[in-house]
Amino acid sequence: MLLELNFTLVLFAISFLVFIYLVNLTLYKPVGEIVEKRKNLIEGEYLEAKNSSEAASKLLENYKTQMKSARHTAQGLIEDGINEAKKKKEEKINALLAELNKEKDKSIKLIREEQNEAMKQMESKIKALTELITNKVLGSGEKTLVRAH
Image 1 (cartoon, rainbow, N blue to C red):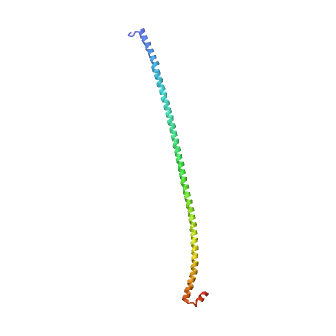
Image 2: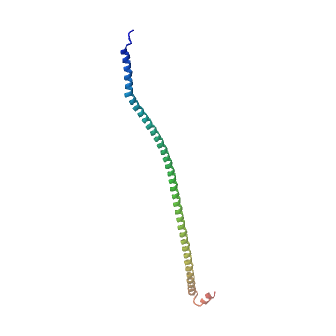
Image 3: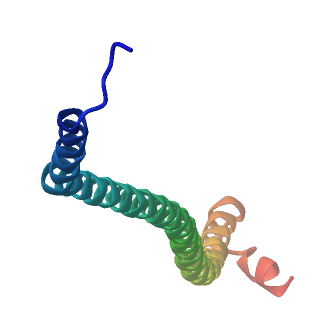
């Protein structure tokens, strides 16, 4: 037997086991705990970041939806404003046309009255000229005959 079992070997084995236990207790456990805490912290931060990212994505989608709705509403308001402006413009144009038609009718009526007045004046002048021409052509004696007719 090459290997003899004596007290030194047993003492060496026990001292080695005590040394491993003490190293484990003083170095590996604290380092293991720190590593475990760090791992848990990283996992927690990762989950929090993931949740924040999901929440941000939801908020972004919500804001996009709100922006789309706001654009749609704004476009509707713009179209309503344009339609209202067109309607007011048409009303003003129609009112102006009605006023212009009244002015035109009034002017036509005034022109017709002036035309009738001028015709009456012309008739009296035409009669006077006719009598004058008749008197000159027929002479003064036949003046009575023309007037009688």
